Length: 250
Image (cartoon, rainbow, N blue to C red):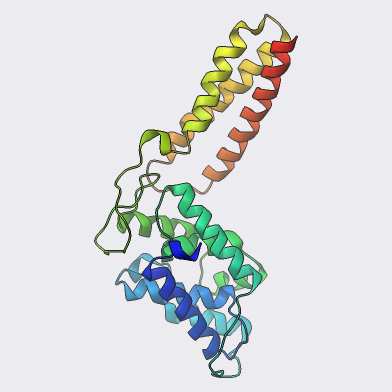
């Protein structure tokens, strides 16, 4: 996973370790990572894309968790389980979006998704929320040359990575569900004039409508509700596939 981290995200982790030492903590938590990511993005000269500055983030952390005990000695500082989960979520976000590397913006997506009571209080101090953080992350990705499901393109920020341009059509995560929908229509129609066939057609039609909504809504910045649409799609197509088997057997 970490081999996919680019210079920006790696520097964010270094900054997070520095923030943990600054607060005198014996762990690297999501609060430290939030400040570290903000610092790393500011280092790239695109801090204006964030809903807060690293200084504001540090002050919010201090307000929620306290000023700490001052600088700690050098040595290994472990990640909390929440930070590990953030890394994994950021990695999955990059894969889902078709990106070749994990950037600071992907880490923001991970932080927005992991949540937690402490992070909620920090967001309150920053007058923001996970949805706003996600929107900022998606805008940063777009400004940095990352196309949704289009692979990595070297942008103005010059983020390291192998450029491969837009993804081929079959690399999109829309295609597996689209193929399943087509197969369901083709196979359910001749399955016989019965109730199972009707249910299968209705479920498939509903899934196709949501698939079209996703295709249109996901072309630019991803709306906050789009992951829920994908989940509903998967459920609909899964049930449609089960109904298909019953219709064929009956």
